[in-house]
Image (cartoon, rainbow over all chains, first blue to last red; front, side, top):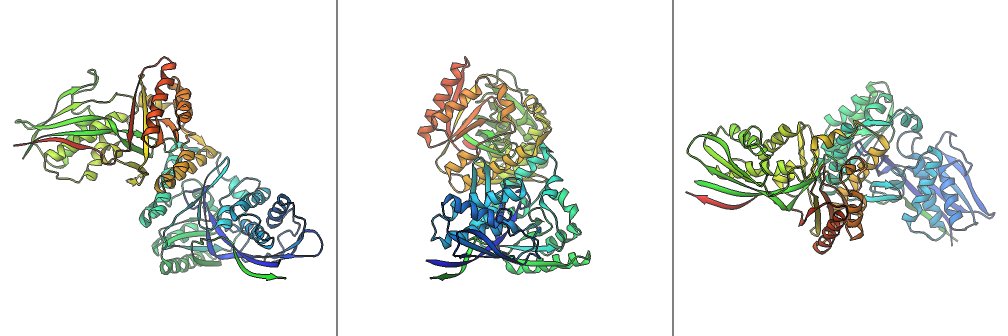
Length: 314
Length: 314
């Protein structure tokens, strides 16, 4: 019987320019480490959280990892003693799907610890439930790629319809996290309840283009489709130097760039790792010119979601 | 030198449920016949139009076939004498892209008559120009499939970005034209200038799903994506028996059904010709039950656009 499972769970980029609320993809770094361990007394606890500067609650009813794992255990009618340890390896409130990564990592680790009673895809409702509990809204655009990996389209929510999109092998992501925090709920509240039909039509033209570009390996079509007329014009105002950083990415050869989630992180798609590295460096330089420190990451699209790093049997 | 070219130009279905203003596809029937003939005196004329009950103007500055062909000839600096004959083989104002078919057929036939000075794709601006002249708006969702065939995504209009989508071989279209006329301009004026963001998000989720379904031969994903929260709820009220006809199509096995263009025609996608035939018959029966005569068509997606039926050399 497994006594301990250590899992890596990937950060995710949601929205993806035109794909507001319906698209997200996973990346290889950053990501959280979640450890699920058996303990002698029944029930689930969060034993330890590190890397969060003390900001995250250890109460299982308040932390996405705890909420997701509790809901899973309840459905499995499983009362074994399990403790979770969460090593936050990514910034909170950065637009990189931190809460989804912890939730996905937790249910994945617990499911592994219990001998995989459920298929990975069947864990998704628990991650979504946890996300809804902390954000106040049902969203799967971080949850689904954090759990399933890859590039995900959420076709609809009634019921949740998750589509894994085939993508070009050479598609890389350059990412910058400027060291300033945006609260998702506040960023969401900035958005209008109604939008012009003309703007909406442009957006869904680009959604169609992006999906077609991804599935047909057409990097130039992907590039032309990476436009957002909905969230970016509004949320970018909350990100100091956004336009400079985005322009630096494009000048350095990125296919396109936009806000990751609700920001402040900014992603850029690139054709190949070398360009992505150059783009990340140029974005960091542009960010520094505005007086803001940042962290950069370069990654292919993560195709697998959470990954078992170590297991202790006994 | 060619003296006469006879061309078939296909009808088209625009909007395609979720793809309002950005998608369209061509079908094998109905379609117009356009004949371009050399004549001794310089200049372009429309010599004859049949099948229109006298409704269409023969003035080349008022008819889409004449407008498109004139614009082409002007760009080619070509002053040869050419007369056009148009056999309308499809109903006017039916939502089947009648004006685009005539324009596409005219430029295609004239280009053939002149020995193909331009590639087919280069003829698209003339068809779009003609459509804009009669509709008051720039649209390519009938023009592009009428000229190029296939299933077309118009990613954007600045500049016009036309993407030909790969589609499943077995995708068939059942079509019904209830014998009542809707004016495109009036139907368009019914639509709101602003739409709820939530509605827009649903729509672009379905656009992403439809494109992914088409490119990955996933008939069930196509089926789930054929939803329109924008135009159909409003325009369907102008079509007597719309809900009955649509429900009849779904019950008979259609993947989905919605308004063709701005109506009153209704298309249904089907997995195979046999189902499409059954669906068309059931739609006609439902339409008859509302007291409206109709014409039905069954067709695969037309993959080639206009087609030369006959050529006279001399």
